[in-house]
Image 1: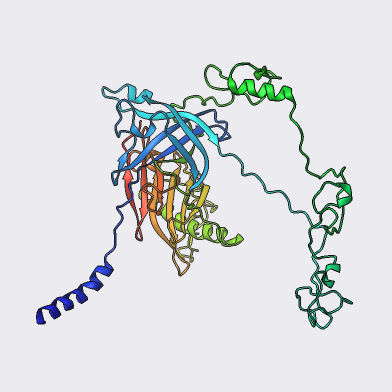
Image 2: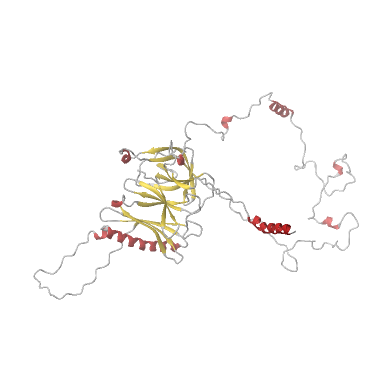
Length: 481
């Protein structure tokens, strides 16, 4: 008995442990590529030249450089047949089918003993089909009517009609009830026996209506045409061939085969250089079909953008002024400023009394041109994030390129997470950060900011992620010349 009691106690203690165990699903394997689609022209749908630049490849749980990962005979991320979704802050705009890839050597890289070059993908861009519009709603010609009683306005189920005798008091003794006179009562009708004397029970069956022989809705049986039956039998047995009434060539929906690509879907010319008027947009290729995750942020009010821009302009002007002092650069408004000549004649005796002089006026704030302010929401419940880009002109050379990443705190203040300033003479020391878009490189539902790091004769692409008060560089590609 003591041994049995101890075993029972152990089983009672183990029962809650067994109830808490559960099956842990293996982590999802994600294979996802990020690229930049570059084109020239005024319209994304009809570019004058275009190319796809591979950036990152998330595979086996970490990021790889998509431009060099398994690059023999061509990179894994831009193989023939790969499909990329062209997206704007997570919103799909179209698709790009990779037809082929080429490694391009620029004039500068071709002069080296070991040129670097870059892999580019080329294909056909297809915009998304427009969403069909729902048919417009039309007003109903018949208005709904709620039947109410004489006592109140509450809706109720309609019962007996006014003036109808009450049959609920006494049960009916005959087979025919007084409710048969109700015009709204559903009933079955049978043919009149006089129209078919051979019909059974034609004289004994009561009918409430007649069905004429020439009723167009009356179902009838028709005999098959012997010629049609013979033609069908020959077709099923295979003993005969029945010619078609029309030729297949007359079918407007018949597919046609042509040599080469159909007209209107040819790929644009190859983009091999780095032109000034270059447009960029993010592209995503995933091994699985996933629902889009939008990272664009709407402005809270019409004045929200103006207030945010005014705050971030003040922060940008302070940093540009400090940058001009550090590198001894002259803004354009001070280049032509000269010390005014004295109007005092040479023979006039100058008094030794010093008069108080007014303090010099403060220098004008630096100019900010070509401003761009892009709002994002990089994660669920994350702080509003803004990317500000502008240029400040200089008297000689220049301009000064400025890029700021700021987040709005709950108190309403802007917190700078990244500050990048450089000019044309220092691009090799500090590259210019040019925003491409916000992308999700590993499908973590947390977006990273994709930038192009442009130097004098080369460039790179990098991902920055905001996990704290500062933006950390998550990944950077190799040099593209």
